Amino acid sequence: MFPSTVRSALRLLRCRGTAWSPPSPGKVFSSRLVLGIETSCDDTGAAVLDEKGEILGESLHSQKEVHLRAGGIIPTVAQQLHRENIKRVVQEALERSGVDPSQLTAVATTVKPGLALSLGIGLEFSQRFVREHDKPFIPIHHMEAHALTVRMLHPVAFPFLVLLVSGGHSLLAVARGVDDFLLLGHTLDEAPGDTLDKVARRLSLIKHPQCSTLSGGQAIELLAKNGDRRRFAFTTPMGQTHDCCFSFAGLRNQVTMMIIKKETEEGVEQGTLLSCVNDIAAATQHTVASHLAKRTHRAILFCKANGLLPSSSPTLVLSGGVASNQYIRKALTIITETTGLRLLCPPAKFCTDNGVMIAWNGVERLRERKGILPPNVDVRYEPKAPLGVDMSAEVKAAEIRLPSVKLKIPN
Ligand code: KG4
Ligand code: ZN
Image (cartoon, rainbow, N blue to C red; front, side, top):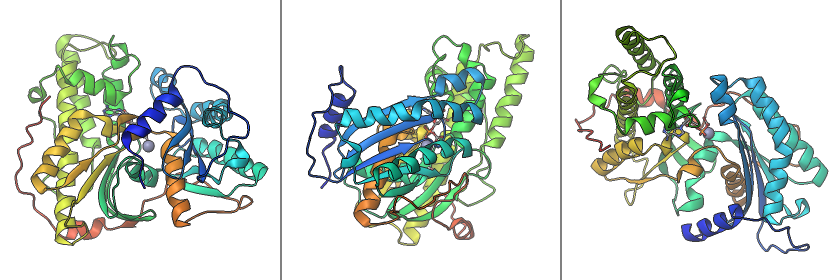
């Protein structure tokens, strides 16, 4: 039922490999085919998948470097870049797959949550496309897609616990079905990727020779490898509330104060690389990792107490852009080993935003016949859209105390 990872990897290599050869006319496909389109933030992505999850063709245009240079994502700039690239990206994915639009079974597109101006471009393009080619339309929830990507790569049955951490989100949920989620916790202020991006910006890491093209999170991870995380004792609100919600704004404030202090001590202006960047990066990364690990530990105990996960092979799935971080993966490994869960994490290219995950979500919905609309239905995008049924109050009321676990995370 599921393709082997090796087959997928080979397929990927073929898709991204050297020269592209034009589709052979009249290529016949026995499987149903879905075109996925993603524009919720700063990546324009498209992919064509068959029903087994084979990636037939994909294309991705990242706006990362533009936004890095601008010091953050400016929605109008993101919108303009999506507008300039969407047609080419979709065409590339189709051409690489050898699939003619007439051969598609459906088109799946992210319509929520995300930046309004970015979502609007993907939705407008998709609605025009499905009308022109008379294809069913599958509106996709971006976080549902992140949560389900793992099932394209591994045979993971519902229910499973999922921790999604990205630049726009952090949440813990039990995935009980393709469109059935119990939300155990979410961020109360900012997402961990946002915090890492802002810390990296405040540290002017774009000026660091090794970091000039890296996202904030990638830069922090790289520099932290040669840093001493014990040099700075940053904290997150751990002890006060016994829930699974996240908070990173306080951490960012502490790091900013420390940067100001160090700038004063070193007698340098804001915008100069500090001599202690590696240590600040390591301490920040460790604090984020341990906050995520502790909240996830509580979520696992809540699931166990309430029979929300299967007794055989209970699974934690970690995904979203921040899940590419190896140090954070190691922190979560300590928690899953302590609690007897299996940890699954898609490879980095499937953790960050892409068209493949949206197409896969379309395949999952197609199989279950859920949320498939005729081409002429008007769909609205939703910048804010919670995932699933919010159980965070129940989790808090359970007041689960954590046993102490030493997070000795190897660098
Ligand atoms: O999922 P994603 O591509 O877009 C959103 O939906 O937000 O995630 C992007 C976020 C950025 O904040 C970026 O700094 C972070 O993921 N990120 C990382 C790493 N790679 C990307 N954070 C920590 N470590 C990484 N290696
Ligand atoms: Zn995302």
